[in-house]
Amino acid sequence: MMKVTRRLLACLFAAGMTTSAISAAAESIVLASTTSLQDSGLLANILPAFTAATGIEVRVVAQGTGQALATAARGDADLVLVHDPEAEDKFIAEGHGGERRQIAWNDFVIVGPVSDPAKIGGGHDAVAAFGLIAKAGAPFVARGDKSGTDALEKRLWRKVGRQPSLASGDGWYKDIGGGMGAALNAAAGIGAYTLSDRGTWLSFANKAELKALVEGDPGLLNRYDVILLDPKKHPIAKHDAARRLSDWLVSTAGQAAIGAYTKQGQQLFNPSAAAPK
Image (cartoon, helix red, strand yellow):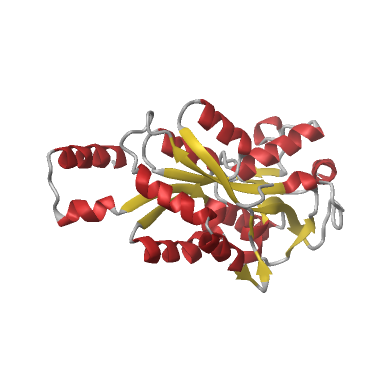
């Protein structure tokens, strides 16, 4: 539907039509982004300031990183904001992405029940923790949604030497095929472990008997990048307006807005445009 709409608008502009409806549509863009940035509340908090400064409305399509990149590759978004460097590299190599800039970082944490049946609490080694979870056969909730979090989780399991799945008889492994908020809700409901970005974890209200058990592993760094589309591959995308959002996110105002966003007195994202991680 979005692709058809864009083609129609392009034809109308070419014909010189300038109705108010078309003008309004021209001042809106589609940002394909991650569920973690939606579930943490960051985008809802900062984007109104961008709209107030520029008059450009931003419609966010929140998906796992893999799905967000696929949405942009189909031409159904004007830019992306994601957190999986390997998938981003592929997106750019295939000619879909142009300029990439880091806007912020935080980290991932392994959360689980206070009872901690796998005895991972207090550790700082994510691979070792995953190994203990598998050894104990303790419930683990996986997102399974091709997100950046899902990609990191699978890399951690590979380092353990495991590829858990229900098909292989790993009944303790629960693949929900959903976003970060859904994964945390599922983990809270059954007393399971899961991998979460810190921003969503701190924003999550339904913690029940869950707590952050493993954190501080350098391998759990979580970087967020904004990527513009290549105009040759995606000529219908709204490149000028998308560029204005990308520029704002790395500007002094945008970086200040990101850094000022807190939950429970804690900063959720660290602005990093000036010094990428």
